[in-house]
Image (cartoon, rainbow, N blue to C red; front, top):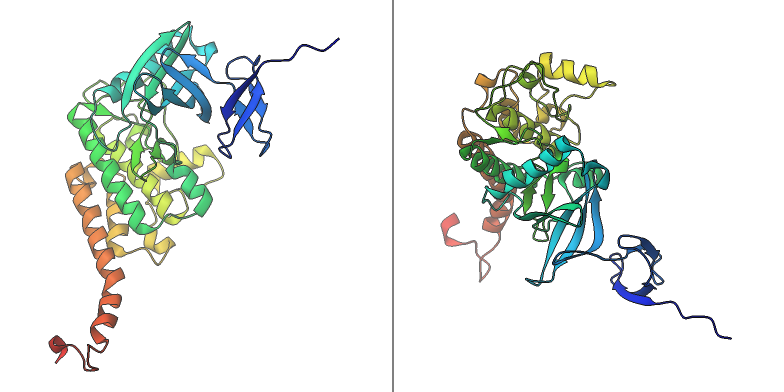
Length: 339
């Protein structure tokens, strides 16, 4: 008597790209092993028109999946809220806040939100796909990010924050992990879960959320949140990418917090001599202890970063131009403008 043949389903492995069969009786999101590369393959799951195909990242409140929008025929990212949080009113409010905050912002460097919905008890957020890693993963892989790239990221994210501010929103959790890259290398600001209105009153007794390595001193003192808090955190994030070190390194979180409050930041070019002076000056100014000593607007900060970028390019290309101008012209003589 022959045994009953188990159903199979063909899926694409997210690691090697090969089409392979996995047991067809797996539950959605359950795992199997790729027969070709031994990587983990997920049983797809449908959430309305979105087919979740592979996991991109996982956080405290939910998991982000690469998905296929079967209606519009495009790849998207779907952030699925963990089941244990779906009955937590505060967690759901935070999840929805992120969706609403991003949805009202239209900027190339802010992740685009497509929909926030619920299907069979599962709450999810469908958004633009940015799966080429984060600034955090670049730092982890390379230790330091090239100065030109850091300045490009700084200009674009500062512009994104300026757009958010025009809509009265502060991000309040700028860090390398919240800057993702799409397949074209464009930085995308994500995770507006802590975002709040710029004119909202600060509750002195409310718990303080944020990442201690990049948090502005006035937030620690609970003096009120302004766009200058985000500017400080962005500068701290760029400092980390540029030098390979967070602005203040200490054995404990309490010591890191104390340094943000009391210790002037060490200029990046004192830590790494290859960093140009204009870049170093711009980041130090944006990380001044007193908010009034920072740039008075994102436009000013962007101008300083852009000027630093221009001077860096001149410095990089001037030696090449000089070598080229010294090279003999056709016929063996030097070019006429050198005479």
